[in-house]
Image 1 (cartoon, rainbow, N blue to C red):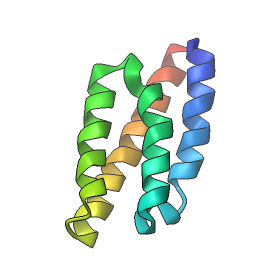
Image 2 (image 1 turned 120 degrees about the horizontal axis):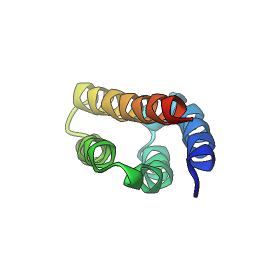
Image 3 (image 1 turned 180 degrees about the horizontal axis):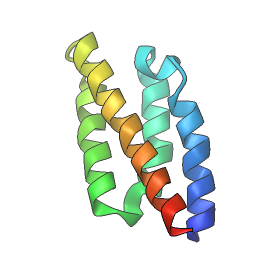
Image 4 (image 1 turned 90 degrees about the vertical axis):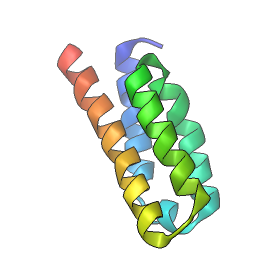
Length: 88
């Protein structure tokens, strides 16, 4: 996958991640994580940040912790998109 294809795939994943369902439905969150994680493998930093937050969000210790970690995950996707756009 080249950078342009990666950028488009991340933008699509970003739209899915913006939906409220991912913070309310464990199944939706798990599906989103499975879509995004492989796209972030190009960057160890983004991948590690995303997966650490995903693990904490999936644990569902508290609503606040889940929301905070989903925010971190969304921000990581946003950062990856900005990075790839700057390289284009």
